Length: 259
Image 1: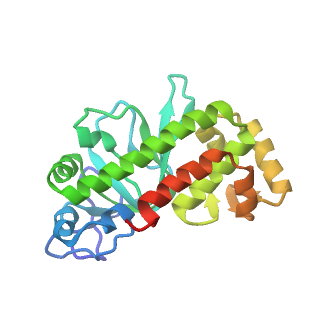
Image 2 (image 1 turned 120 degrees about the vertical axis):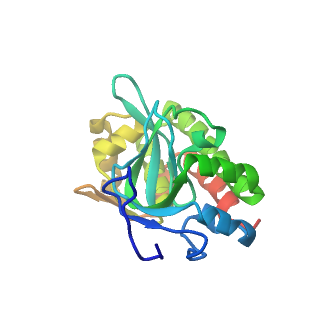
């Protein structure tokens, strides 16, 4: 189907999917930074395996202890990799926007993901079959290097999150998390509830409420009915722990600074 059309894909009911292929083509800019850095000689091979899809809030891209069948490349919104205990308690271990992808287990042909991946901020993206993804990574040099670069960022964020959750106060962690989310969605305004923030930070909701109230009283953020606006980015960054700048610097080195 030509770009602009939509079709239902068997097995994925309820999703608005736009198909692409090597003949009809796809605009050279998808909006996903990883895909858009592909050289022309690899572009068509990757694009031929992609289909565009809506990614509504709460959509599960993969579930823990379940096979990874699809790999997603966001072009808007944000996705979270979440670790969950047997008691149902959760904490975020990785947050990605349009610079990332989900389904890293597919790269190594692993049977399942240890953690689930969920859409945290509604958006859109592209997806491909896990088998196609694995084949393309193994055969296309530039695509492989971009995937490895993104995995490196996952490692930086995951390891820094461990340190942050162990050593830093909730107010610092909240400021860091809000700034990181704003960076990923490229907007100072995000739709997210305090309950969800608490889950992502691995903290009590009441503790997050107090921390958010403190930031709001200082004029750093505005929070109302699930909408958070960062009013003073430098001030919020001053409150955030050093983990924010460490992760932000890694993103700049990979995606912003000339290479």
